[in-house]
Length: 243
Ligand SMILES: NC(=O)c1ccc[n+]([C@@H]2O[C@H](COP(=O)([O-])OP(=O)(O)OC[C@H]3O[C@@H](n4cnc5c(N)ncnc54)[C@H](OP(=O)(O)O)[C@@H]3O)[C@@H](O)[C@H]2O)c1
Image (cartoon, rainbow, N blue to C red; front, side, top):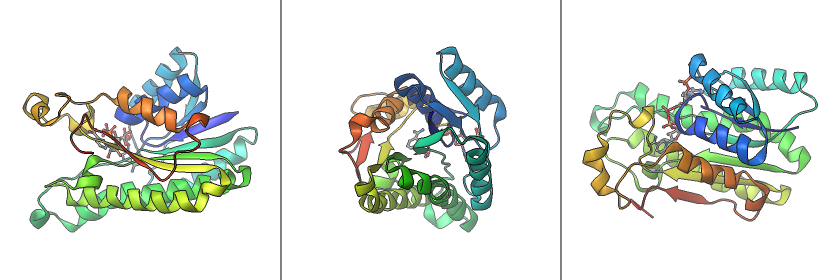
């Protein structure tokens, strides 16, 4: 049975991706999250209500030992299943002007996005390489492509994710494993709930925030067999803010 591991799938964009991949590709979904079990269960319920299947797999992507242990246990308990899609979606922001940014906020944001991508990809990749097939999609951001005042830590994290993905794509292309980034602009989720959409919409050519589902359609396509010739790409999805 084919499976997709989506990190940070309890809420927001990750939840929408989990639902869309279950619907489009019929995959069993591993719903990762850090602590919000209620929300993760809701994601699972939404997948099931559309006829799909999935399970919860909580761990903090930051913690390499925990990720390795959880995934190894899962592989041992599920020899008939294979993870062919990995979406490194978990991410956080801790915004501040650089001059005021505490070191721990710099480190934490990078730890979750960059080390999280390292930890989860390390745990899944050996089996993908052996099967000579895989789809890895890493969640970047417009901030990681163009920079953004007040988000030097987040931009550094997402920029690192982008460059690491391009390198990994080149290492893995011959094994039929594609690695791509998706770089959203303003998307409605808990992460952007403090922002005033009315005030900010005019700087978006499409004149609104995007929906998690709109990001999920793109990720689901990249996760499919049809996207075999796309690798090492960063696909912007930002309503025209920046290309
Ligand atoms: N929203 C936007 O406008 C936007 C724009 C560009 C890029 N992005 C990126 O898109 C991704 C998803 O964003 P979102 O807006 O959906 O965020 P969100 O609504 O804040 O949800 C964050 C998700 O990540 C999980 N998470 C956080 N830290 C984690 C950790 N250490 N280990 C495992 N899971 C962790 C959370 O789990 P819990 O529920 O357990 O806390 C939750 O499922 C992020 O990488 C973000 O940087 C978002």
